Amino acid sequence: MTGFLRSAGLGVLGLVVAAHLGRFFTPEFPFWDTILTQQYVHLALAGAGVLLILSILTSLLKPVQKLTKVNRCARCGKRIPKGDFYCPDHLRQVVHEYQDHNR
Image 1 (tube, rainbow, N blue to C red):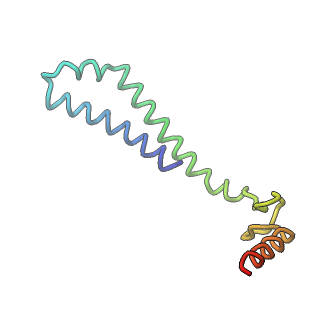
Image 2 (cartoon, helix red, strand yellow; image 1 turned 180 degrees about the vertical axis):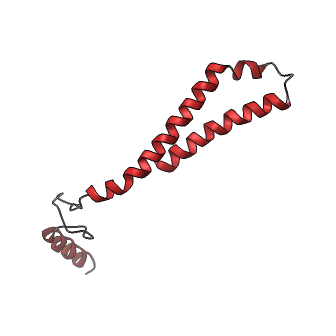
Image 3 (spheres, one colour; image 1 turned 90 degrees about the horizontal axis):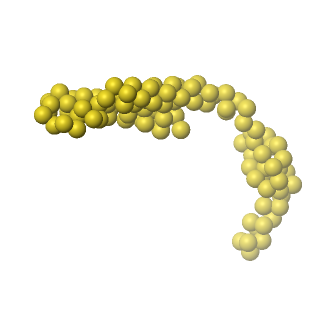
């Protein structure tokens, strides 16, 4: 998510810069004036700024999310120790199903 927001914000900034460079090098084309109105440029820069700020916020909140994440059993949803996939009851059940399947 963080990478997507950062890429989108930088992409919008890149489009604004590319449009200004296009207007600088080819001023004879009339569509630059319709694309690069002050309202559109301010809107694009504000959108890019919001995307970049959101990417920074999500990258700062990622460690907090890891701290609050609780491991749960894949079958019943009970809390389990870190690194486990199943609670003890379902672990036995899965092991027995695997052994029965391989016979």
